Length: 181
Image 1 (cartoon, helix red, strand yellow):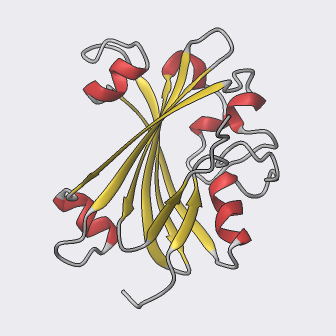
Image 2: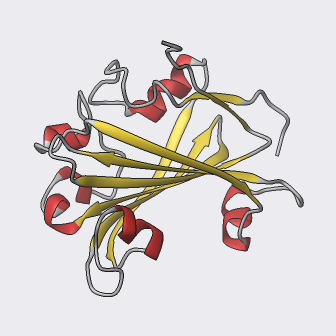
């Protein structure tokens, strides 16, 4: 991988800004705002979710189905993240979330299908990548990753999405800005 500037990923504002259009999702907008070029490879499928995802979506990990959107996200033609978003099947089936391409809507896709997120919970852990993650991201040996798991809840408190993003430590600066009051 050629040497380049880290992506400053503003997690406290990510998905809250509302400044993205139907042509660019929140991630692509963040990349473009930093003068970089975003690209995503997207695939969509129906699966039984991993246990950690099932727990956060209040689903049965052995029998419930989710819609999963798998993305490899590139910045300036370099793989920068792997991001998988999981949605309860009953909520996502037949919507734009099932399209195997980069899709977006003003205010967010979940809001456009009647399930806006009102609360987000972030969990971040730093770990070594799996072999698959190393291969997909072209990681040099010994490069740790940050795993960012974001669970989104609707106004009634129902979990409507879990996004798991794997971000190589040599390509990202995670930024949180919080009100101190």
